[in-house]
Image 1 (spheres, rainbow, N blue to C red):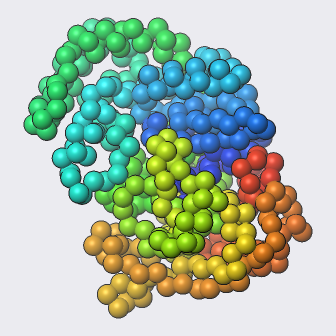
Image 2: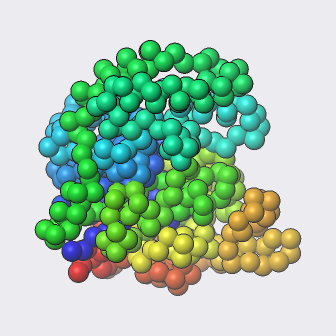
Image 3: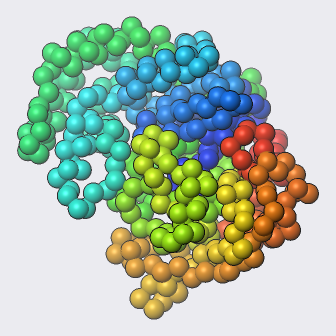
Length: 429
């Protein structure tokens, strides 16, 4: 069985949606294994654009989609997303979408706490989307979570809400926010139960059956390695592990079943929200990258910060994330630039280093060391073979391979799913 795990190799928004959609045509099952509806994947199919936050991208291809236990699930967000894509002509139901029965739920009190905390931080905001992802993960490790399986047991649900509200209402009151009433939450959850429970099952059993049947599974990551709660630019990170290793725990499989790990990176760098960004550009080039790349968050609509490709950052993601091949996206956005730069190291307090340090203070001081390359005037948009690329564009890609110490196995040259150059097949046995 040849499985593939897709993860972001920068700070997210690298174009994972298109790559997952493209690879899903060769998979039998697509699994989301972490994150929540704070991440979004945009899929462009002909004249239709699908914006997905919770649904595995495989639903667009008619594949079985699975939401694993590593995800924190907002029921209202999921049902709204299903209704939205159904209105676009997609068929989504329990026959092609399954949710792990032990998946934690995001309740209305989670975003309330998220926003109250962010407001209390003042100028030290983390840049959270305010959707309750962090507080929901806190409840998971604090053993307070309401999980989808609890919806089938009203007595269990009532008892667990008592414990949950004891914790959250104390925090909300301390932050000057309104507390929540138990009965209103209980009634809302009982109303959601018949809508959600038909999707629920022991996902680990289904994935074990898939293994015995030699089915191909695509594990779809959200966010990216540099937003990993352990390995990212802490504390400006997400609240889950985004590296490929978490596909095992977040889906209910053994680590040997993860298969090939494909990292997604843009041909430049972007970031949404607060936190260090050594190669960020504040000039006309940065503005041009943002405009040509249509750099706005899929979920939040916030403009993304843009900068030159950071090879140190991606090499670090390759090592930590277990990336075996790189999918390089948005090469066409660089068309027309006469000069390109790649960050090959940082200068911190006069010392040259080849990695981004873990300490926040040192990260903030990191000054990029650049290597300059020749750009190209020809268009790469829509290219589907190496022969259609300018020689300087190929040289740029090859230099990235050398610096990040990983081969570029797939190259994307537009948002269209078929404008892709496949170098080697990640699903190859």
